[in-house]
Length: 364
Image 1 (cartoon, rainbow, N blue to C red):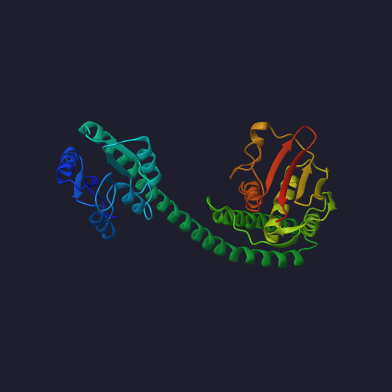
Image 2 (tube, helix red, strand yellow):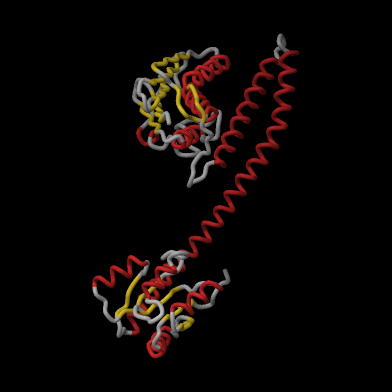
């Protein structure tokens, strides 16, 4: 849309005299075009760029101001094209009718030029703000699209050397099983694993949209089976840690199985990382409610302060005092986004005895 030096106002009035009076009152600040009827204005509107404001006379022989207003509102809302109606009657019923048709404001005839200018200025400002917001929204969408494509390409390019590192590390571990260098190879493997986890978190972060949230693909899923697999994997990667999985009732629902596994993994990893050494991580699944399934993950450790507790699900947050970790501070944020995408809720409680995360997911 081309930029204009001055706001454009269209005046529609079947009386040339009244149109001239209105045009003269506004000419100092606006480029004013007068139309003798609604039909002529609508034809021009259909062929080109709309004005910043439309001023309509209420009573016209071909189409009344209210009729024109209704027609315009089929394609342009009150923010895109504000409409000011001029009326000589101004009864409560007519005002309500005009507002229902989509008018933004009214001025009674005969009007004072300062009042007309003040009302026109207010509506033109709102139209300018709407246009500015549309430009900002468009720019944000472009930036979000670029960010997602950039992170996707970056993650793809980083995964290739990481896979080479994992393969080379596996060969080293097999050849150094009895060597003092085996510990160095294990440190290398764990560092590469943390890097892979960070890349996956950042990639998930770029997929989240403010208007739609985390994308999910629903399918019939057994929450208990998913949790069992994740716990077995955690036990294999943390042999020194104790895990307790408790299941009650039927835990089948319509969820995204991959994202559900991600919720389990992130919550259990969080409990392992922040829990006391030697203390078990307890995972409970309660499917006794026919409408939803509840999952809780708890660990014994230091209590989380209320101010930190209220920020746990914000992006790029870490627990106080944690300078190093397995991610970039997106794990719990991604969990919350996945749970919300399923229409569920997640909460966190912490006291001197334990910290507990509770996620509740509707089955349907």
